[in-house]
Image (cartoon, rainbow, N blue to C red):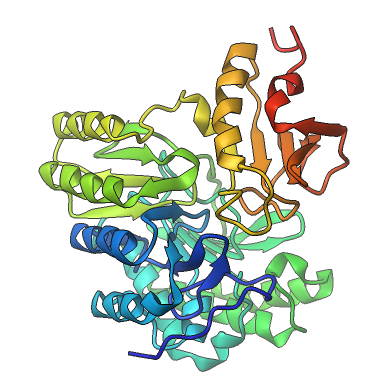
Amino acid sequence: MAAAIEARSDVKGWCPGVLRPMQSGDGLIVRVRPRVGAFSLDEARALADLAGRLGNGHIDLTRRANLQIRGVEADALCELQAALGQLGLVDRDAETEAVRNVMVAPLAAAGSDVRRIAMAVEALLASDRRLLDLPTKFGLSIDEGGPVSIASERADICLRAVGDEFAVGLDGREGMRWLGTCAPDAALNVVSTAMHAFLDCAPHRRLRDLPGADLARVQAAVSPLLSKLPSFETIGGRVLGLVQNAVGIAAPFGRLEATQLCRLADLATMADARELHLSPWRTIYVTVRDAAAGRALLDGAEAIGLIVRDDDPVLRIEACPGAPDCTSSSVDARGDARRLAGLASAKGFTGSLHVSGCAKGCARSAPSDLVLVGDGGRYHLIRHATTRGPAERSVDADDLASVFPENAYG
């Protein structure tokens, strides 16, 4: 097991890991990347135990379908890393860990082409040393379509099952461009070719940052490997409750407590599940025995404070941890977001909301109808933009009701 690597808090544009944690206001953040998008129930219980013993018991689900253990003290880091290594959740070095950014369809079954390709891609990222030069935010998604499709979630390279083949998409400044299809057995070569062609260009953070000529070169390297693209839809997204042979369960603002994760694993066991599948919507999917088992699991999850209905008002709000968890924040972003959820419902506001502790906007990069950005203990009010948009005015935390004009949403 590698020795603990010193946490870094002065580096921008990177994501924490097990071997390179990030310092925050409540201690170190340790991000654990699941293998092929899922944790076994035993792994989930172990993670809950470690979060409770070696962290502060707070667990965050991320937009990249990972899990973060918060509040880890420096003197507990080596023990945590060793335990995660025994679970097989640690890569051989921090560089390999940083590039293993693979999102997997949350309803993909064990043994499916989606899971098989994901395993091969993860193995490629660990074995091809040149790929360590990929930017740490460079990501891939491997989707199977259906009601919980992740194909519309932004990734640099996307594979999406279409019939017996996989459509291949590359991200650009205008969004995903679907180039053609390949057989499942050819998917790994296509992904490898695209990543190497990207690295042949001047260094950039993402495919979307490439100049047009460079992006065209990457597309030209991949296109000869593909067949004609059939028509298909990329609709999908988060679905809660019963969905196919599984259930979807969300954590409020992506935050689980260690006790909740342990209890969720126990509830999943009673439903004859084997894994907890993570998703980019901070929602966990669990394949269950039958509809009755699914309903029992949903009832149990709701009883421990998790979200099981699509109409829950909290789901409309994205919020970062805020103070005191994050040193960049001067506001209690999640506490205020909970109050906003009730206010929005009472005022009839049905748009999207984003509460950010600072201008970085870690919880959401896309625009929202209403954005509150913390600064000096107050909020800047922004409409129809990201956290970088122009502020309309400032609002005190005890005057949040004023962001919803009377009768504006009736």
